[in-house]
Image 1 (cartoon, rainbow, N blue to C red):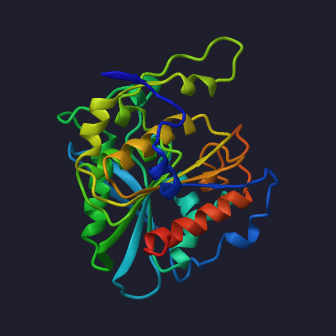
Image 2: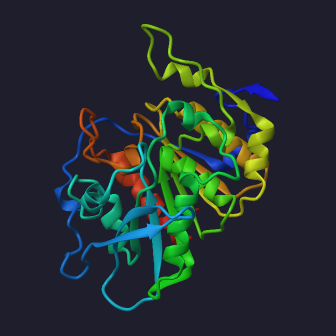
Length: 306
């Protein structure tokens, strides 16, 4: 049954305990001191191609701390489109674009895997529910997870996953098929997971307004949520139209008794939590909220966030 998504339909008991709101300004911070924090001599970027369920290969750039481990691991899935290729993954992994996320987890002693997934996903495909039979980009994510689980220097019980935008939707579906240690969702584009129907933006209006009028298939969403056991942290900004998708996502997870926390940052743009990613034509400043969200992410995967 289709139901209108409300901006907030969570009962007061859940809201007080699970949603945390933070201030944040739009002033850009210098990023130099947050990147190249780990020498590539001690932690070179490893380029790997991982075979998927249907025989295709997806790229991943990996860096590990110095030593033999076993180390905890973080697998990062970027936003749309898929098929970025190895060069882009290596650039992110090495901090070339100024984003502090990947190196920060490496500095904290984590194996960091920046993973790709198949492309060819347009807006309509992003909205469509994911069928169980055909091989999709979710299977690519599962193949990456299974690859990392077999690495001899990885602690198989401490593998966390981090998905931004469409990568967040990938992670949500992945959690229904596997049980990683922790999951972080940065402004997840969870439309297919929720069975959302999103109208096109009206001419002359803010494109973000369409998200307010989204409708979801609540029964499908509940079916997708039911097998999830992994604790989830959701990060989203108030300047991101996907907040109107992510609040109901949190609410349904909480109503289903799933371990979920949502942190909302004032003025945070779409995928602000990743900071500068080098996307052409987009402003991606490093914000104070980026750094705060990163701190909370580190605490979360360590089991220290309260």
